[in-house]
Length: 241
Length: 201
Image (cartoon, rainbow over the protein chains, first blue to last red):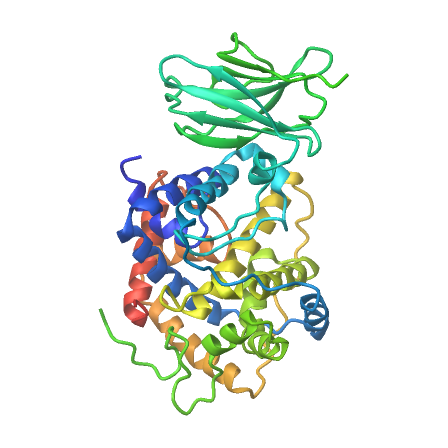
């Protein structure tokens, strides 16, 4: 990841995949140079749009003007003492997008895309955050080798679960951490691959409401259809009677 | 860094003198306060650019209309988050539009690799007589010129990424380049475009 700076142009015009975007956005939080460059390259990119102007049909305007009367504009960001915690919370957004598996679940609509990073008081309502903040959220923790820790937060109501890791070591070369949900028949169903990041929040793919457990295994790159190794962590869910 | 020397393309959004182009910053500010009239003006000033880009990337006219509408709805909702110290209103807007267009084509690809029926890419631009249209036409001329300052290789990669909505990895594969080469070309191309146009802040 040493040449992460080199991704700045591709990132500025969305020519990155979700995993690269997530990595780059984490990098952006600490790299003012890249933030500046992204801003100026986006200015340049925006100019390209002058080459392709097309007036939309007037029906688009009509629908839009009808729509906005039902949507409340967000308040401006205000600086406050809570900014620190807000800032930390915002990190959920990239993590959620990172998980390839999460993309399908996120779909369109729910996520507010923000062209600018490091905006202290952004409020990102993401699928991941929704699960973590769900009133019925329940946690199952597991200890991993060394200092690594992981927990799965599940909201039966939302039918979704999020894996949260801390100090997770990289998977061995050529391997990847794969996530699983165990269904009621005891079978492990693929629930996505983990991006290679020590601290992250990943939305599990699949129906977490009916699942009896979640697990992590080490699989060959690209993942497997069923686990080929013993899980390095298992998270049994509470069973509703 | 070169200074901005056009009369029509100040990316800061200040209305260039005498052109009658709308003050996008002011419209953003008023929209953020819930001023629907201002938002309507913002739409009128920028819809052709937004929709043109979306249509170019998405291609399907019906889907493009949806994306354009979603994009402006998001602008309405989040206008208060626009901060003029961080960039121009146009850049903010086009970033949202481009991202939404790209998300649309990629999610469509992921769900099914259906329909590649292609429609006419666009109805010809409605060259109306508004100040905004005139402004954009002048800007387009400058941008076309600036694009000529890129190498062929840079231009090709940049166009596939920006107008095609492809990732740098896909661009590399389409152009038979080693992975990593396309992202460099995209970046170098954008830098040259930026410096030629003098849009750096």
